[in-house]
Picture 1 (cartoon, rainbow, N blue to C red):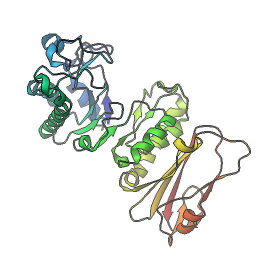
Picture 2 (cartoon, rainbow, N blue to C red; picture 1 turned 180 degrees about the vertical axis):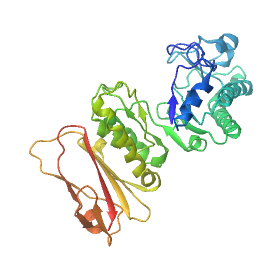
Picture 3 (tube, rainbow, N blue to C red; picture 1 turned 90 degrees about the horizontal axis):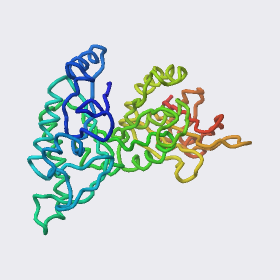
Picture 4 (cartoon, rainbow, N blue to C red; picture 1 turned 120 degrees about the vertical axis):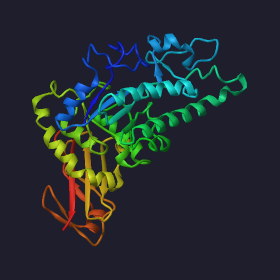
Length: 368
């Protein structure tokens, strides 16, 4: 699937304008979305698109026409964050407009995925429709409005894959997962940062729900440079994808993409359906991270090991696996070694050091 990100609508050439004006900019996309979508489909790929339906820019036709549709304390100027306000989705006419705007775009071409972004927190909570003694209801009414809007959208487009977005992680909750089977955890995609972010997410939610991508380096958030292989291994724990310009990355990295894509297809069913176990936490030990996914029938397991910091004069690290069948024999694909499930869980597996920081390896076990 190819997903088109922000910037395709209104006169949005930067992030200061046009949220709420969900009309295709035909200077950028002559003839609208359909010619582009048809071309992508002809390549054998699905097409997805980015929206932020809950937001409104002060510099937008919508705000100029309906300034009262933005959440703000009556009589006071609202607080901008990321050059945007939040639409008051507790109001039916606002929800109707948001639905009709998004639906018109989706009807215009064969769009099969929507990234529903949520880039700022709610503040200055006030609605012109609520009396003073009921302003406290806005938060709850707002969330109910979001649910209604997404349910209406999926009723209109039942085959649409909706991916909700993080809102700084606060949007990752069971209510949103009712409407979208996956949620983007965070725009912080640095692989080492992600070890901590994804550990917290994995504790509560299935790995199949966790949006995770391979990002560019130096990473745009922290400037860290990590091996392309490590970025792929970390993203494998979630939905897996690429969030970068493949024409601008080093040739060595680009050459790894076919093998990484094959790796995703090889392990996707196991990761999506298997049981997750935490073996070691980089968040706690500061040196390395390790987790395991085991099939329900205990015939297969995948261990992800990430060496965050290398150590001198270090022979090996003992990693005790979890969730295997003690009576079964398991073959390690990478080495051909065979161990009993009881040995792997009680005595453990010795993992030799990897050369350098931010290195990783996968350990794939299958029943003999």
